[in-house]
Amino acid sequence: MFNLGKFKFDCPIILAPMAGVGDRVYRNICLENGADYTVSEMVTSDPRLRTSVKTRRRLQEVGSGGIRIVQIAGADPTILATAARYFVDHGADVIDINMGCPVKKVCNQMAGSALMRDERLVASLLAAVVTAVTVPVTLKMRTGWDLSNRNAPTIAHIAQDLGVQLLTVHGRTRDCRFKGHAEFDTVAQIKSDLTIPVIANGDICDVNQVNKVLNYTKCDGLMIGRAALGNPWIFGRMKAALRGQVIPKAPNCEQVVSMMKHHVAALHEFYGDRVGSRVARKHIGWYSEHLGDGKAFRKVFNQIESAPSQLLMFDNYYSNAQGMLAA
Image (cartoon, one colour):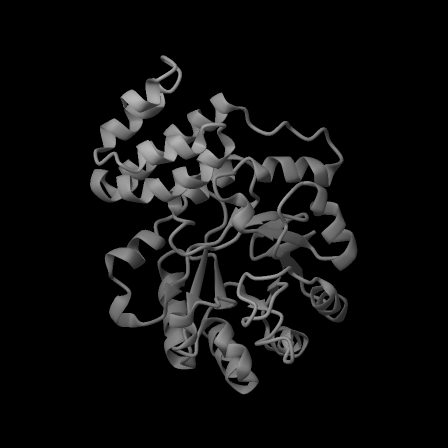
């Protein structure tokens, strides 16, 4: 059991922040299906981009209520601290600092996981943000820059000493990106060394891994990323496994199609018909992996341009054997 500000959690299962995926629509769906909390998509600390359409959408308040965590990225302590104050003034309950993104364009700005190469800069950034705001500051990072430089335990101590209140650790280095397998030895070491909560992240893909990872690392919760794509039911199933309850069955075809329609309709409402229809395609790509005819479904869906026709495709799916092709 631990607190983040006024919020209390007992071994939470959390949706990872995923740029271009974890928008307000999907965060709400995951909350509705058992996620304990979610984190916003990463937003830049650059003040010039603060009022851009992309940033405004990423900062839309979570409609289902609960804790509002805004993840920020940057490499300048003063700018990062100013951004943190701005987002707190606009409703953030927690500020999360991104030190885990391995994407090249982020690392080229010496942000994301690139920061792990400079421990002095990390200390300056963390001190500046913790001092700047009155809400909890958390940190998401990787195990290090590359396999020869797994310095996450050192950075974890720096973070705790400077007042960071929670760490999330992805069990890969920046150099690993998403290749190979996550390792939890470093995560377990960090947890054993610290007194603040530590969340484990990386390759936690099914209910069988929940207690396995928690028992091995002794962490205070789990963060789920890619395994939740097209699969919001994973949170409820993992929570049941955690509590020793009967694990709900995987969704059947009818439940998958119903969720797809619900998700796509919400995307249309959030982004507007044109953009929402395009954003829907990637989510349908993930959802349709649960369908026996998923490949054919995706092929037809991705050719549909209008929002009403996208929704009609779901209605037609069960109306006749060739319903989806008629859409």
